Length: 449
Ligand code: FCB
Image 1 (cartoon, rainbow, N blue to C red):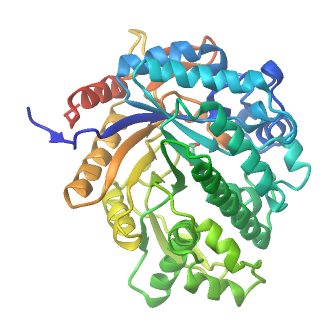
Image 2 (image 1 turned 180 degrees about the vertical axis):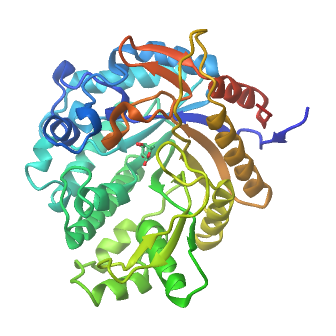
């Protein structure tokens, strides 16, 4: 059979997150999250969309597991809503919340689908935000308590764990660009938040080891292949800074025990860095089992003296873009994986998110012919294969996303799913890319569309 064969045991998955699909925003004792509050009160969400109902997965999860079974998905990456477990952020856990995820994990496992759980995909309990959220160092202990509670409840059923999803986004989009809650625009605060997120990650990993959990634990970072916009010295330096900012600021502490030196030096000439004690750095540096790579687009970077404090910006290139405006450059995936492999000592990796938004249409014949997505996925999976062939330790690939869902500030306007969701009726339709992905999984091989 033609097509690129993947190593035996390669994990083929699909990913979602709690706020983006669950709905049931106040069901069964769930507390308010910062995203509930933000979507209800901010003007920063397209069409004033909210996740109140989303894909109603909280009530339809059995149907969604049946869909995964149909697709043959080997692993499902989902996140836990922290305020479903701790409605008040602290205190007594909500048994109904724990039961929901236990039932979900068991039903997945019973259907031969490995649950891959992310503890935190941005939906902080509002009650903790009221105490200062990630800016308040106390949150590290709250996160540890939450992590221990979930490990205890789901440990027997979950083989793959991730502490945080894209802490760069929580830190910088939430506290510097002001796009996500708490919608601040203060760079030093974003650095402090990043540090606390990393510490919370380290604490949860230590708790996982202490509790002698079976399974593996890692973290999912948003990582981009970065290229300078020109060979100009200043653009080269700006591209290095961007790499340190977007990728290295989280990778280096976790895998090397320090923040990137060049960018730390640059920033300390322009602002006061938070204190990073040796003890903190050693906690963050606690060994993990795998790196989760969330990756979508490449970045072409140039020097921009008007931009404080980083003095850089993205250049527009002639590359094709998705409906989200993200540059399509599949070779970038290969470059990124090679870079991570070389820079961080051959660490085991999984692609925990990759995919694309396109303007899908449900046709009258009931089909969704999303050829652009199919080609996007084909090209990226092909680069993943090339990386494996060249020695990169990549053990899995998760498509973002299983379902069309709530795409944060863009609401329901951007569809990423292998499965089309009609948000008025909650009807699901497997798209052409979904049927194709099923054949890839069945054959463990990249087959033509
Ligand atoms: C990532 C997020 C995920 C989804 C995709 C499109 O940054 O982790 O929740 O929104 O982008």
